[in-house]
Length: 85
Image (tube, rainbow, N blue to C red):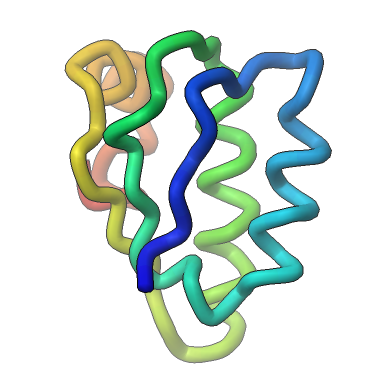
């Protein structure tokens, strides 16, 4: 079952979202962004932290239903390929 990102991931709640994801690490192989509407570049920090943990375990992250804005941000920051966007 995929890990569902909340509607909002900003500086205000990014650490909490990251911790929730790490507590559910088996779900992180597939991250569903379909609800994500209010976010800034800190969402990339969260996704990259999860990706780092998965890589250490010999796995990788799959980001599904990424909004166009997230794809653009990932491209601007040069991490699109790391996140499969």
